Length: 74
Length: 380
Image (cartoon, rainbow over the protein chains, first blue to last red):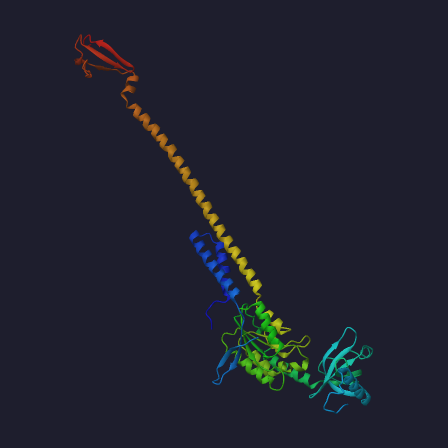
């Protein structure tokens, strides 16, 4: 199981950052830190979209009863 | 017909179907046929098309408009009927077919329809069709299990839609037959395996379009119960325009085709990219606004500093003026200007007392604008 956030979680976090940046009137250092975090998340989301290549696997039950996966050329 | 081993007397499809048609239509009279209606379609032309079947076989039927108009309400799928029909062969499709001129109800619905209804009732009794059971689909699923045939168009279509729409997803095929005697057991086994794939967040069960009799697997009770037991949200996509399979009722969502199921299951990456772009604009706008606020604040601070300097300068000048005046008051010249005079001896010593002025002594008197020579006449 992957611990990596889904694209949805990434975009939700980005949205929260944007809202804070738009709403708050705190100090500029904090605003810059929010902006930098937002930019990093945005870049990650874009990279993931650009690099995505569909994976299709076939799930089969193996001799020992566990489930294995093999790539499927579809 | 030639019985030889060489193709010296070759038949064309037209010739062989024409010959078969002549055999069938010449050799068989119109008869009454009893069977269950399936795949009924009433076309805009007014003609009716359907299939009559029993447990072992089926036959296509047409009822021309002229007869259909006199046949009463169109029969529902699953109804058992008597049809008065002339057997024939459609040469353009090479299809054996009955041309029906009369329909009579048998008074009871077909065995298959009754069995299906009984299954539906049992599922409903156990709450498996309850709308409150329906789970929302995940917005951005990471992995989807596909329970379908490895060879069907359904799989091809789903893979294609996923690739174009959201290639971040992983598709896990659980291969199974979707028709035939063993299909139900295989589908049940595949559905049970979904629970053992922890990465899977959504399950699609489906197959491409087919006539109703090919979808029987998706009406079986065991398949429906296994689908209801899948721990993640499910979509049923059995690819039939007019009929609803029982899995459609049990699944969290129903899609008309496997392609539509994937469109339902996956976000469109173009939409996602557009959303990300908008967030990027808002992020930049937010920062710009914040730096403008800071700039404005800085400018106001500068203005205030300048004012303070100006005030300080004015204040200082006032103090300097006052200090100058005080200094002036202390000057001996100012005292002389007020009418005082200073008497000095020739040697410059200041003559302060009356005794300093012996009669006849010359001295000099310093007044505000100069000196005058004087002589004492005697103390008064």
